[in-house]
Length: 253
Image (cartoon, rainbow, N blue to C red; front, side, top):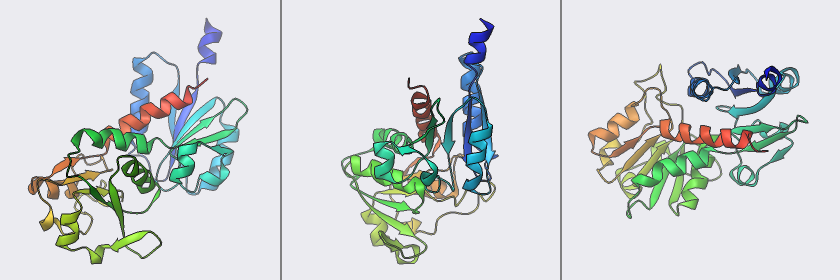
């Protein structure tokens, strides 16, 4: 019996930078406790993605990792293979570690986003603005494509695929995009008085404002939307859904 317990004691963790605030560790600690599992979940706070290979080599019983800002794209070259969806998206937020220490990359962000926004969608939600161009925004774009919603990227700098700079945004543009998704860290605790620089005056009750941030629960971005009667959604439901999907992947036989 004791040996079986030892065999079931796996380690999981989160790879990112400045991640002490993270939801994942608490979520999985609660999950393991509720399900009476002897596993542990730790934060791997890295200054560079290069540190990851040593961690994987030196951490016994490591079975799976979540990946967050700023490594969702940077982690890809060190993986042995990519799941089909992660390859299409171009970003990884979940890694399965096989018994032979092979690293397989997946993306569960798109699943979490798609399933958390879907219940709020109406027929007139046809176009979206994606604020930011990092790894998370790529998963959002993939999900919107699956939902047959057109989207445009908004960024601080001109680059391939970016339709608008923040300075380009007008009331007309915001009116024409009834979903606005913040994929940037702007407004995350402790900088709770900051928000993306968009024309909030053009927001209406037909808009959905979705913030991937979940700390604080209601960012200034969401608060500005709520004042205009918009539907507001934070990133907590998405996180729960993607965490459960990660768990499913790690436990594949």
